[in-house]
Image (cartoon, rainbow, N blue to C red):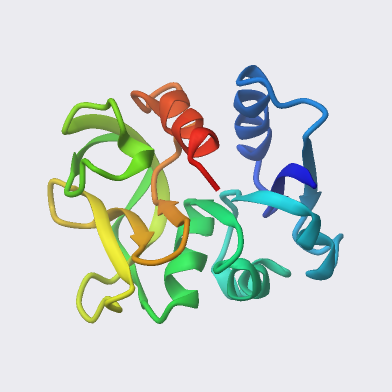
Length: 193
């Protein structure tokens, strides 16, 4: 079985994530494919799926929503920005348009679940880089999704599924403005499957 598939949602930051994965030792066990260039069945051969950032809304991201629905119970999935929003919507959460757009802005993130493997060894607060105009609505969040981090205004910055190895972060761990970003990705890769 191949190790990691990166689904590229046509975003310029995708290859920053790929660079980090390679720095962490993945080279031959890593594939990158655009969200409309592979089939959902092709994804079956991978253990982990990283859903990249991207423009627009999850429904416009090729096979990404279907990949989340089909493989959440059997694979480790990490969604970044648009990927995070796609995970949230796939399990019944809603998105809302933020009154303020974040474009290359560093803000403080506060962990609400320090036991989550993604944040193992990290402090309870740190700065993250944000590029988004949509966010997951906290009201009516499905019981299966647990908030693991928020910003200082209470906007959801990270979630995890209660039963599956599925997580999302609204911020960009690959940005140099995000503290501990490489550690988060390394923690995800080290999680037992």
